[in-house]
Length: 136
Image (cartoon, rainbow, N blue to C red; front, side, top):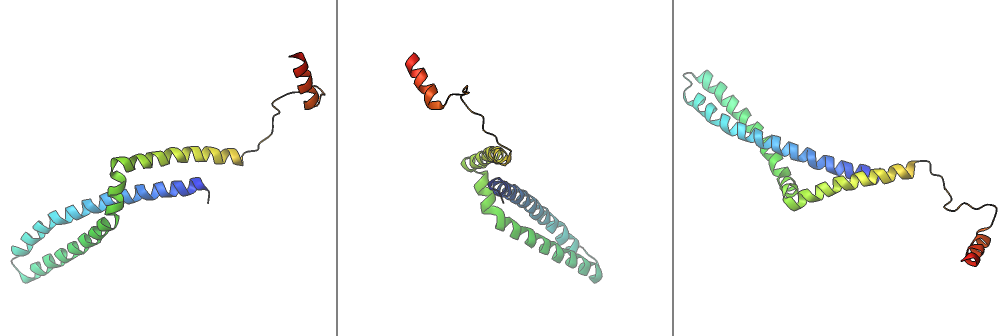
């Protein structure tokens, strides 16, 4: 695994965790709102069969809420850390670093050739330097 792939995986994980955190928080909020509806349904159910059905829905809702609440708790510190201003800057800097690193890796993977900086016409470097010094 190249350094750029490691950086990319890290950035992808942070973004994924932030998305999962946001979705889990929304789901917890939705289940909290559904709770009141289900409690009223349970309260006003005229038969035992309807109350049992409402209780089963309530139980399933609480299970879904718990799964999402656990996900929120799992990802809360990471998400809050990277949403702070100074740490968002670090993520932006890592994204810029990723671009530079990919460019460097591409250069190192490319076919490189050496191009002489000084073209000489049959003279050795020592003779060319000596001649240049004499002319100066």
